Length: 102
Image (cartoon, rainbow, N blue to C red; front, side):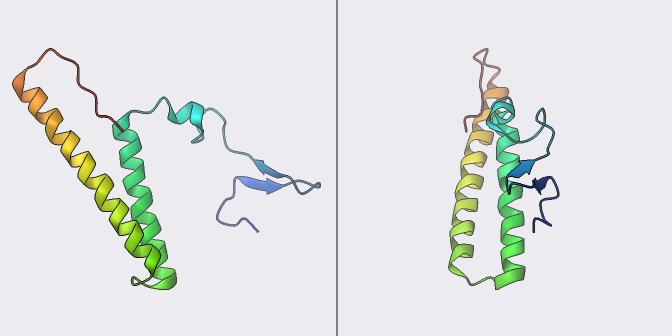
């Protein structure tokens, strides 16, 4: 039933059990510790994998593919803008701390 999610099992009562390590699984507690760059990187990889699997299953012209591509471009563009701002910060030698916002 959950072949693509080997960490999920169903108990005798029909309850779905998540068997992932609670210290490393992508829950709010753990994700809140990740840097913006890590979250953006994982988001980009997720978009790329979703688009790849969708294209294999349904082709590249489905409506969802257009939505995914638009969101991918938006995330990519926002990341590029923040990355360039960070480079300018490094070059300027400013002592003001800079973080890449989500």
